[in-house]
Image (cartoon, rainbow, N blue to C red; front, side, top):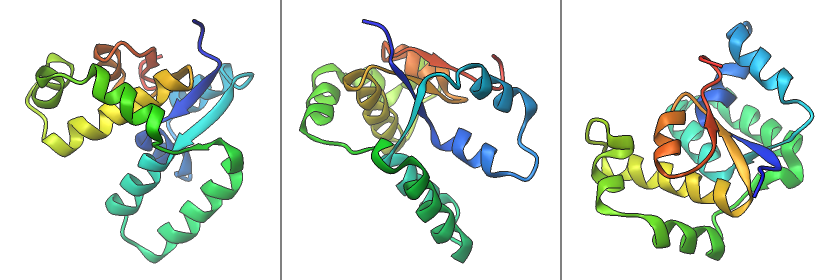
Length: 143
């Protein structure tokens, strides 16, 4: 099954918001601009928590408007995909790396499940973690 679009992770959304985003990230997205881009409600929540500033509300509203029908929710299919593939190793050793907090591992697992259900490739600095969940992923800083 080929991937039909891209799921932009929180770190990529934060990067492209910068006045001068990293050129490799911009080029990575430009090379894939023919593919439909999506964001997750999980990223919106994560960004709101990471950037608790008044301007963040405006930025998130702009993101929701810009992506409109391409904001993906965690629905029953995503939840069941995550539950069906999650295992102890993913909850405690995300990507076979250092132990991750349970909430972080769950968030990444739900993002991976979202990508799987919607046949998307994840664009994230945590590409190796998503690949450990069996999801196609690209690190735009390395691409």
